[in-house]
Image (cartoon, rainbow, N blue to C red; front, side, top):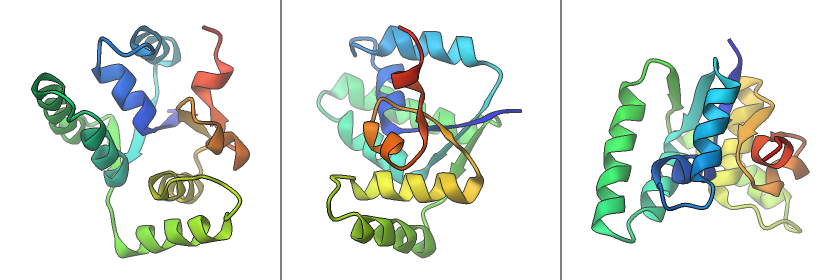
Length: 139
């Protein structure tokens, strides 16, 4: 089964019906099915932080993260000292880029897992040679 990496962008769009990309997130998930989702603890942390703007979004995000950990079709790569240092290495190696540390950890995790496609609209992934599906799929 195809494996796709889910970035914070995707989790936010999917969880928030008021997000401008929500319909596209739901539609892409159906269009690309079947696939196995891969993400990281760091991505989920970033997602939770982004969703704390209102109690309703915060509750939705908390429930979604709990569901992610229970879903056998979603693999969450754990945060480890090794993953942190690997991401930090990429972060340090790209002083000309504005990659977040979370994105660097995601990119290194994708390389480690042999995943090329990512559910995101973030061009930084394309700069590292990945396929950002929200940027390549027709709206």
